[in-house]
Image 1 (cartoon, rainbow, N blue to C red):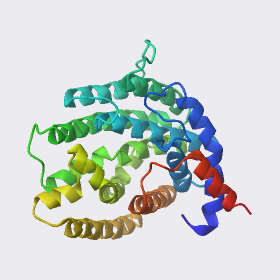
Image 2 (image 1 turned 30 degrees about the horizontal axis):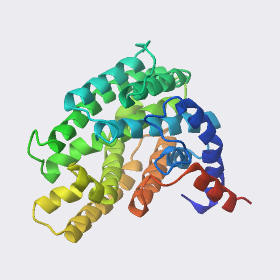
Image 3 (image 1 turned 180 degrees about the vertical axis):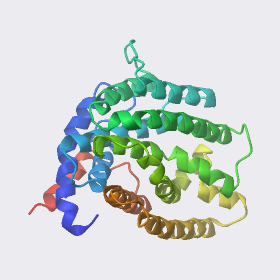
Image 4 (image 1 turned 90 degrees about the horizontal axis):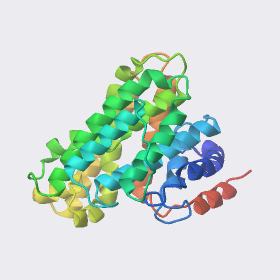
Length: 316
């Protein structure tokens, strides 16, 4: 993040963390306490604040809560939180889409991670609907959730041996969807965008969003390939290894591709229509903050205490 913005971003992230913690506190089977090394709450708040440094506290909190919930959903689809089939994954995303569209979950959350994910999502959707621009983007977000469910289910099929692993070229289009960047940004347009909203903005930012998702997916793959090797999950580095490259060469090839995509992404930002400068700035901040983070460390093991210590270190 830019040095001149760092102190304000850290304070905004820290201020929003208690709101996210309260929203997720009933769902301890899926979401670890913010001071646990297994929590992604602090990172989620920090990445939201780094993307939109001028956002109000409640906007940062709702974007941070969204990221934390999506991390939990990703844990379900990766079988980190329970054992689930590709059909379970498809059904989960259909439920997420229907809840966003207004369906209600009446039964209590119980202890199953999937049930807790749905209840946390329902609570978040109630907050999302309070934003003036949300109604314009909600149908697109519901459709994106269905697409993401299909892509996540395909990853589960590959991971469980139901189909041979894909080639690098087959893997990346699917993996950019499962990274959930498209999902997050559709919600961000509804939370931070002007009202009344013009949903055609999504089409205008499509290429930029696709490139940003690819940049971050590959950066994440470089960070996580050792863990995903043990999980049997397809990953860009591991796919290249299976194609015959040594690990170091595979990492370098993916890293070189990230550099190419970052350059394409930066060029595409300059081509966005007038009036979307705020989207260009947010996507640029989002990709360079999160991409840099993934290349340096994991999203785990950064707690709210760590965030508070960083904010204290940059006061002044």
